[in-house]
Amino acid sequence: MFLIGLAGCQSSQPSTSLESRTVSKQKVVTQASSKQLSRDGVQDVNWRIVKIKSQPAKFFNQVPFIRLNSVSRTVTGHTGCNTVFGRYDINTTQKTLNLTAKAGHQSCDQALAQEADLADALERVSRFQLNNKQLYLQDRTGQILIQAEQN
Image (cartoon, rainbow, N blue to C red; front, side):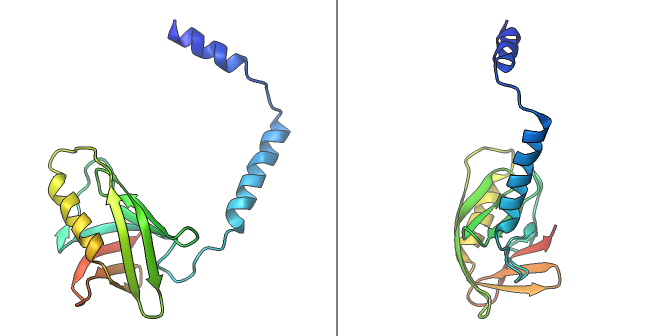
């Protein structure tokens, strides 16, 4: 009975022509490409987290990663279990980076330790080094907290 109701809702929507849907898609693509993406090699890149505090990053229900979005100055990503979201400030000339990020609250088996280490590491990041397709997030003394590679 639920499926019948759902089908009824779908059939009551006005139909759109293929031409208007194509135009809408073109507008979306044009709007997305009109935003200037950073060319510094750090921002606007999906970084797969390889190590957290010298320990291999583990896959739980998704690959751990972070992304620094230059337009909105937001950090997004995944711990391996939960989403990561927050804000950041970066100075690419001085190679400084300050993150304010939090993770969701879903519980994954044995993910708690990695999530705690990642949250602590993200909070302590103050510098970065970029070497080819490797990103090293460091604390103020230069200790590598997170190692990531470009997807």
